[in-house]
Image 1 (cartoon, rainbow, N blue to C red):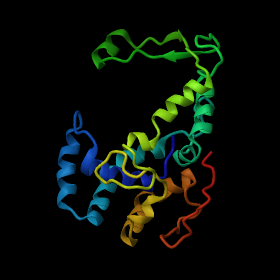
Image 2 (image 1 turned 60 degrees about the vertical axis):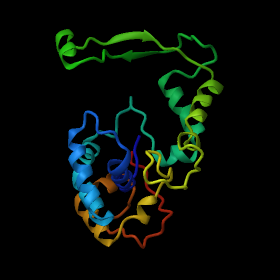
Image 3 (image 1 turned 90 degrees about the vertical axis):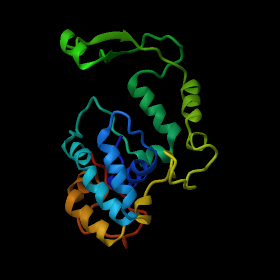
Image 4 (image 1 turned 180 degrees about the horizontal axis):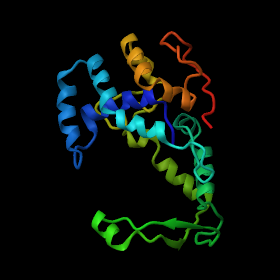
Length: 216
């Protein structure tokens, strides 16, 4: 799943400032303390550097793998049921009968590093359980934003909630010209690669309804 890296930055800023667990992530403890003493403007700039390794992974990823279904978060948010039907069908779990043998998925042993080293991670094959569309879509409905955000609708913001706002394109409400310049310098190529901008000279004054080009 691909998301506009600028929205990722704003989401990460508020999450790292307020809601993300620091368990098993000692680096976040110090980063949160830094964000707490900085203004939002300075905090977003600090977040750009803190998240550099994640953007590096996105830049290095191979976006042309036939066996990987890649979708935009923005598209899924606009039509969650249609896109999740596509996801379920791709994974082979969409079916008429609860225990169909229609397709198999590869399951990997997931355990501690020592266990993986000892057993050399031998892939296992297991029958995939399939479910009817209405049951799968019921699970999607159960995890809708309004329920996870305790009644808030998408667009209603709570900066201390892990489900802060639930909308795309919110970065324009938080960036200023300094953020734009820094982001272009650090991650401009990533925006072009993913198709979220068509040219490197984008700015805050551009139309908000950008029609991003497909990244594949």
